[in-house]
Image (cartoon, rainbow, N blue to C red):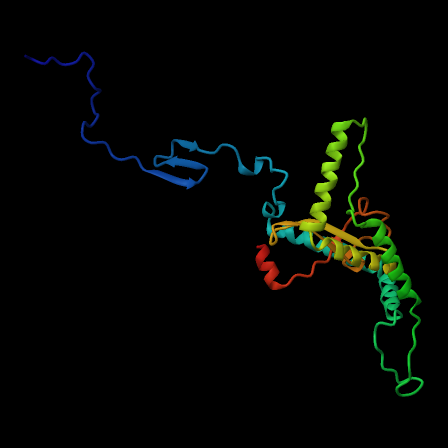
Length: 248
């Protein structure tokens, strides 16, 4: 059977041999350019920088080194200014600790081996304040009390009781450091007039911890009335190299 030619023949001049492979050069991960330069395909038309960051993202990873350096310099200057603004308070606090009578001092004036006597009134007052405040803020039943806001009925009262029991169990049984840290806080509060407690999740212990922070390790502008309204709050954290490795 004879095979007739097709009605539509291929145009003259086209090589019927094997076609050459088309080379594709990737210039940029976002663009692909063909070898003849006539076609450019954008695989990612949206710039990554235009994507909105999430709330919990670390902004330091999105800024360049120069910008981070400027922010760090400005922050350190502000913290140094805060330290200088409270220098008078810090000096007075350190001098006050010397008159508690807890530190042995060898005197040479007015003669060698002279006895230096300090009154224990200040130390006794701080200990008495600590004991009374501890009894009020940390009773035997636990430090947590609950209050129902709004209409009280049987369900809300039972829910409040469950919350109270659970929180007291957490603070007295699981968070074993809570009571001793609270005692340290109250003693320091009577001496310095300010003390802080930091409640946070400790990844190394895999639980919530509550630690006492001395007033000298929390740096705020001296004129600030509260932590919430302060322009800056700086916590001086003392970590060993081993602790830093665990947090990495």
